[in-house]
Image (cartoon, rainbow, N blue to C red; front, side):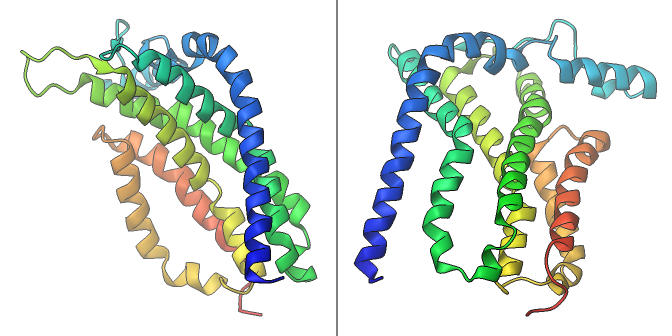
Length: 257
């Protein structure tokens, strides 16, 4: 195929992706009010499961800094006249992307796969299923762990007692979906490494050579994601991310083919 033929094929794939997002977005738009009340805004309340779990750990381990006050709540305010309408539309779009991720990934793979050799395409069905599973595990980790911890710390942080803690709707939503999708992408590290290993781009020696560097970088990333200051929270965020690094090392060949 010529360059322009590839461009036409890519355009066709992107149009299909847009159609999938549009259809799912319409369905998500209708369900968004319920999802806001029962899913998106749930971390704003002290009764969220993550906070209750940390309260139990705090009582059992004698680490009161892990506990969340029973009356913890975050007040979300809408500062612009049209912000709720636009937030409704953008949230429906992001939810459509999250729900349609397997379809989007399948369509993109259909564009890439003709350019690969048969040995590079081998095992792709299992990788496709594993990749989707890892993405949603990452989203779940972002929702149940990373976002609540970050929200709790930032909402309780006080520069001055004279400043009233209100959070704008736009700021809340931007951080919510950014963290969920970022964690979903981070959890794709093993599958991306496997694909690069099949293509001969990546080998296990890379992970062995840069393991110490990776530990430092991953600790910094975990500290940025959860700026709470206690080592327990830092560890429970760092551990799964580092486990992904080690899993990625096991999925690539020992040497370049």
